[in-house]
Length: 462
Image (cartoon, rainbow, N blue to C red; front, side, top):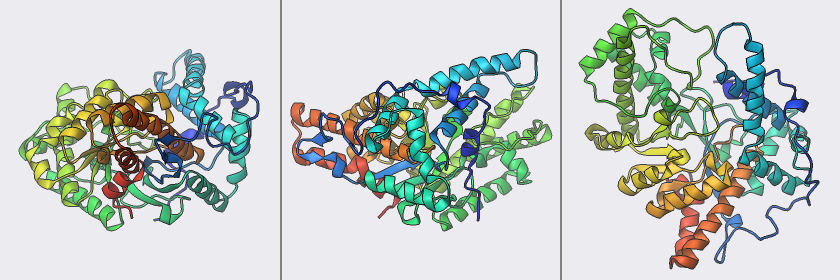
């Protein structure tokens, strides 16, 4: 299936009328740094005698990359965040409110700790100023063609010794995403939560519960035949992760109620992160939860039988649409102990470490042999990453923990996250060796597991 290189996420990043030069201007007070200096003057990321810069990396979670300037990618983020801070519809004063929200969005994106470290990383690597203009001077060289962009991606992979990445398809589809990443450097996953949503059911013309379940099975099996390595649940953007245990009869009754009075349609193309419909009658909202809960459990069991993991988003930061109550990982205990899911031997990975409660996820990976986690997204924030690695390794075995980036803009993001992960992990592992009595062999094993071996085993990567 041939699909556009421009995903919905990338399209959002191209939106917005914010003047780039004015809204995203970054001072150049630090000047130009030395070219090709990959590590700071304090030294390479050493853990005892182990140089982590020489350890291969498998990036366990990323999104399609955008063939654009970093300024364009950030402008899109700012526009998206601003739109989420302004009530929908047309009304007096909306343009002023949007301008105010855009100022706030600019601050969120450009003053975030990840931006400072990211720009300094690019400055060290290429010998440019740590500014928006300096960064653009690099990305602009490689976006004229798919071939240039593919070579650019490969150069970042090779520089940071990134062997393979796990690429999430941009949209729900049982097929590999279109990408400029060389085919031998990635495996792919897809979004499965869309198959529980009323809009998908109606778009497929499905009117009975058996037909819905059959279509879900058909879609997942088609993805399996095409090489999918995992199925992602993105529902924490629009509902809690908890599942009740409705019977088939209860789910069928809920479906009939919803189809009898469906919500009004939306003209725009839906995204997997869009909110659920709001019903005038609260009974319909309860019916929707009942139906979704039944379908999620079916999907979890089906994934186990297909020997493919369920990937669950659980974290809150940066994106204004993410709610603490929806992303709370604690209700997943009932999912992990559900007898039918246990019998199916379904594996789960809680991506983003359940932040801001990585201690809860650490407890889960210490309790359940089928539960894993990764540090994606928080590898962009070294201060948070230090907290995450310390929490996870305090309780969980290293063969349940994976590096990841959650990269979704330009290729340098992959490199920056790899650099951060090595630097922060070296600090934590040094603490284990110098203060906790661990041997060099112990910390070497931990580093290998986290940086590549766990992901290789979990996603079946050679």
